[in-house]
Length: 138
Length: 138
Length: 138
Length: 138
Image (cartoon, rainbow over all chains, first blue to last red):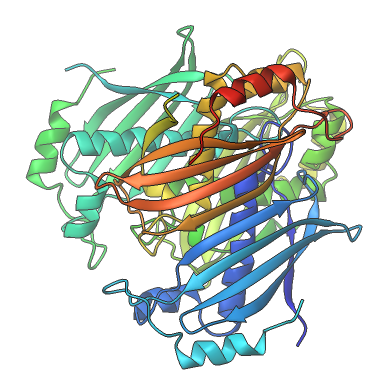
């Protein structure tokens, strides 16, 4: 299956007085793509929050910043499911500018928990099946 | 009673590539003072969200921007309760830099609603009593 | 001319623990449309910041919040140029959900200044001509 | 020397509709402490941006999230300089709640560059001397 991706244009509010993307905003931006992805596979946040069957908080996140991004820059962000465990999964992201240059990467690790007691629970089968379809070997 | 106020230092992430405070962040900054104020009068958000007796969403907000603020600038923000109605109240804010110059103002209007059905309800008496103590005539 | 508009999906980070759009984020969201608009008429922020011929800071902003927005809600945001003065212009925004209900409005007032000395200057003719094309009578 | 630290109260806008700190905001919050630290050692962002002798962009950032934080929670954030290289340095952060429980950690790697051509340059001696004073062995 083709990787899940979308374009994003750096907004003025993404930048800071140094003239470039403020680092924390790269995490916000890749999470927007993750939200689209969850919607695509039928697990949008709205339903997840309404049903309260499971939450999938992030327990680890990291980013590398390889090329400064400025307001108006367009990046293509690609999401890859790289690892699915018993109670967690890992996603990687790549940001590539319009000249094809890699500007940054990111990684997030998510665990499934019971919203009531916050205890880890196994990945629901239907979520696992959907994630499985998108596993890519980088 | 002395007006409720606190200092705030403009952070890098508050600014944008034009080198000054991004306008929407002034709203975020004055809301931080409002949160402190609610805590001070015994109606912190945490308790409010836990009890679910009433929510007090903002139905109107406005700001004027009189002097650009840059990273490291310190402003003293003052909060005034200016109007308490049957189901709503209005707050004004003034931001003054360390030379005494007014850099901006803001205003927010809040209504009390029933969290269950979102219908407007009268301001709870104990909240009204606390707000009354802080009414100032600008 | 048809009004300038685009759709926006409320993201998780736009919301707060009360479960709805945090008010200050409505200002950020309408500014994103303004950025697209500036690009459309040939005055993108990137060029504006690079050329340093004029900056157009916001001196006033206001919003009304008529219906709470939740994660996943899609709003159509419409931008109207309503007033063009000697050194300033005013924009209004309307946010309408997918059932056609008005969820909020906003207004921003912009002035043109000389980036070097921050003094007000007349709206550049070419910017005025572009804005003129989009003036609508609400 | 005692580690550099400060308290931070989780704000409503730091949280999302899941009721807890939105992960990307932890990066914003630890950067606020970094800004205070830079000011403390005489290298505040304002001066750095004005002088344009060197910029110190972040090239890597990571966080672990060990305990969800809710609005009103107070965390003590501690900053440690753990590694100073030829052209870079690494900082670690620990967030501890008021019961003494570790809620999260973070790490940022910074490089010094020439603002004009973006090329890596050696850490300026005076910056290195200041950072050296705060190196801690965790």
